[in-house]
Image 1: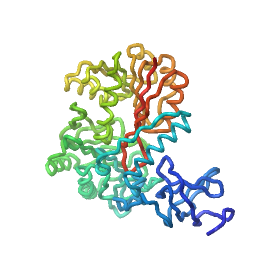
Image 2: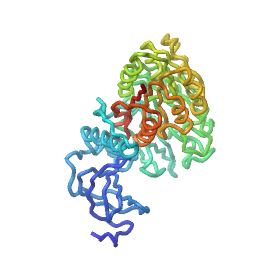
Image 3: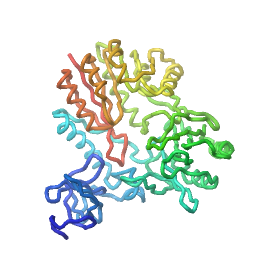
Image 4: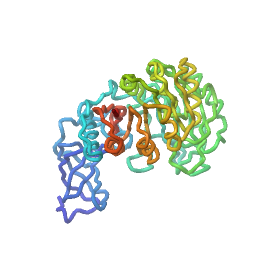
Length: 454
């Protein structure tokens, strides 16, 4: 093996792994530099090949495991070493829970300077077959063969697949047949995400409790001869398919869905039961991908906001009413703010469907309107994107901090950053943080943080 000073790109070297990175990579040190090795686990001695040298870290690929960790197991998916979708399938479920809990604890301590209790993670009862939605990139080879699969880690190269074990079996079982049908159409495929090329993604969504399925094709244009006939054939072949849609994304962009979705056959939405409520979910609106785990968050929120003295609850980024509606069903007055007009329309329809007049929804930019709406409510629920609270949202909260604040986060780093400011600048007391494993087999972890002021 080469010495530290002789290490060059492409060379192999031995390394002890002593930690886990936020993307699920093994972390070790070589000559005082941090080394990231996807597929390696803490406690292992591995052989790695250097792939990239940055100023303060190295990136390597796993060549072999000299001393495996006790937690190492055979992955459920044969593509796990190539596909970028899952990063921890080689780690047993108990160890995944411990590693994710530790990731949250480290982020809160190191990035937020917070000494707070982190509760044991809510592990998923079903660590496989849990995803109710798939957005699968498409491409066509020079020979005309259609390929569908997730991207190789750190690239836009598709790893061809016919099944994915983390998908709900009711949509996983459709992939191979849909690929075969799309291949025979000879429709062009937009390989390089450039405008005007053709098909881009296959999107599948299933109701975890209802079993209803939506099929959506994402294309840069609607010039797909025979699409309606094929859509009707799919609905006849699979009775669980309640609708086939076409989403138009004409931009040369990594954003999967475009602004316009057209109903081709059946419905543009499916019905699902969530936390005692019946929800209408469209092909192009956000809904938590792990239904069962998302339902476990509801009692935490309901108990928190129902503590005396009860107050009106404002939810920012309310989507289709996933959390607002169960809160209203528990007897709370809830106002949801959401920018996406389709989601607001669905949220209102869902409130009416479930006869919940105490849940109201407004189309609004949270960053621009939160301050004025906080005058209405004394309690706030936020479920922001991975980037966390924007400066405008944070400033609005700091200027008029509500009595209670519940923060649902999918990124421990931005959660820690935001909680650090909320506790130090707004006088919040932070209760023990509760991690929830929404994404088994990956390094992603959801958290529920509950804050209150005197």
